[in-house]
Length: 169
Ligand code: ADP
Image (cartoon, rainbow, N blue to C red):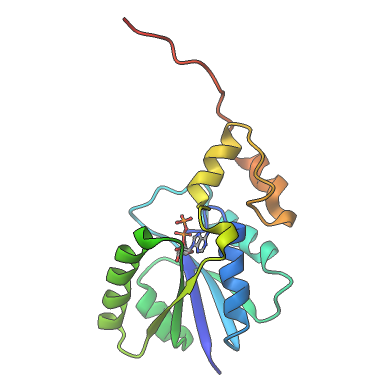
């Protein structure tokens, strides 16, 4: 059985992520969408919330499982018997970081391959941080988030107020 992992912060999962997961699910027997707890990032949503959003977004894809992990991806892959990590690539700017990650993971687990799936052009500008910012200032994010979780995500984000910055002399 060919198992692949789609790892990320998913803070929160967007239509861009979901597109990569759906396409990966056509290539592998099982795809694990994995919420990685990154000690260098301060997420807005808890790991439990991020897992819940992902589960609901992926509910219609039978061979996708959702999990979370605090630790090295290379170790998680070994534990579950995964052969491949799948990363989405939006732009050249993603590449340098992903290249470093892929080589590090190969060093830590030589059995593990990293595959890159090029973003759908509709989602190439989409990131979780951009979606959060638009939603927090009251903008419409329905085109960016999976429909079944969109309202819930917006409702749980702390709202920021649009206001004119006071001028200082
Ligand atoms: P973000 O950069 O939005 O915070 P993550 O850290 O959760 O996203 O990213 C997890 C994976 O999903 C990475 O491989 C990232 O390149 C990919 N990804 C994120 N957004 C998109 C998108 N809009 N299209 C394709 N891949 C994406």
